[in-house]
Amino acid sequence: MANDASSETLTQTWLAQGIDIGIELLIAVVVFVVGLRIARWLTSASVRAMTRASMDPIGIQFMRKVVYIGLLIVLLLALLQGVFGVAPTSMIAVLGAAGLAIGLALKDSLSNVASGVMLVSLKPFRVGDVVTIANQTGKVEEVSIFQTRLRGADNQIIVLPNSLITADPIVNLTPDVMRRIELVIGIGYGDDIDVARSIALEAMHSDERVLADPPPDVLVYALAENSINLGIRCHVANIDFFVTKCELTERIKKGFDAAGITIPFPQRDVHMYHHTPKPGAEQKALSQAQASSVSLDSPDHQPSVDPE
Image (cartoon, rainbow, N blue to C red):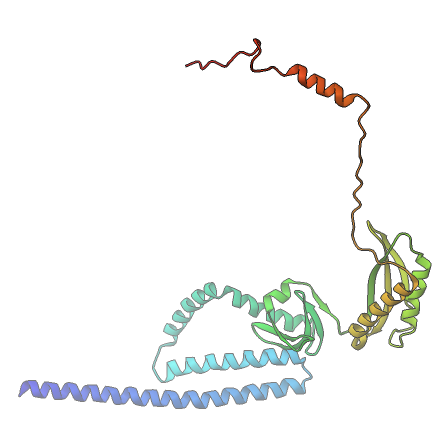
């Protein structure tokens, strides 16, 4: 009987504890769901406030994620303390140790976060700008906590870590309304520079997309190993840069071909020199070779003796 009573008491205790744990879990789920909705609402409200304040879109995107993650951390801490009864001092100690371990394990990710803060603060570019970073060119679509997303000219998505962006030079192609086209084309040393210059200038002046101010020009850049390098320069609107550059290259090449101007490629000339021997030199060399040779049957020939 005593064993039965003990078993019944133990069962009731476990049942009561299970009910308590179930209630705590149910409360935790309800609080988490409600807190998640509140966090989203507060994040949206902060985004609206930043938009009304005419904040930069990059800063809005960045701060939206920072606010949301911060609210989630506060929600989790509130759940641990309010529902599960975890003491604040214990949480601080655990968070400190966990923060140190996470910081060592995720130092690269934390570097991306710090770089993201620098990008938002310094604003080297904005959403919609066309930039060149780490040999990647595209339009900026989003700057997040860890990475920046670009869309290339071929409509591909380019994702760059923020730490890579702050470590490399950033070329922003958007702030100015115009860009300079610069072509370096080599002509042969036997070609007329003035004729080549007039053909290139005519190709640029005949294109209505080429701006008159500043005026196009053609300069001799260098007397290279295989060619005279001409620098052909003009300015166009940002939107016309790529197509105009390609069409000017084709038009100048056709103009050079029509005028007989060559575009040389690297080449090497090899000169072969044939030396004619003096009369009697071959016979003299043959006689010397015969005189220096010794026949095996002659008495002068001494066979080699093995010292052993």
